[in-house]
Length: 182
Image (cartoon, rainbow, N blue to C red; front, side, top):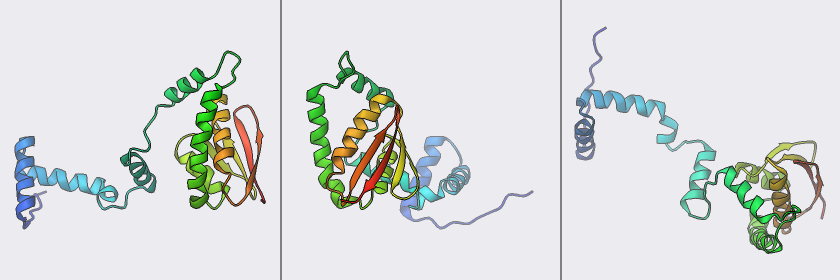
């Protein structure tokens, strides 16, 4: 099959970019254009601004410097470090967690209208996995018992300004969290 031919008009910026890519890749301009078209087609949603909503939210979280990616093993190290020999958390750590939760309570009170909104946000952040159940009830799964006590403490305290109360029934690494009218 003979090659398809295409005539393209380039502005100065795209002509410089094409020449630069051809020099850097030691490829012909035709090869660079073929690769560029293939790459663009493969990554169209991201290049067109219609990228996955989760990816966009991660980008917003990370680009502000307020959040970081954290390997789950580091989280477990931190939690193991603050738990004493009996498994009880260090009181100073609990005070710090409560201060963080109090700050988030003000933010969450304006941001989330339902318990599901809050839990799905924390699921998105990677702290837990949430499954919707009947009505105002959610089944929440935690990766470990340490993450469970840590996150349940955070959830209970950060939900204080929401327009409802919550009730928690805990298991070993799971919990059932239910909305209770305030």
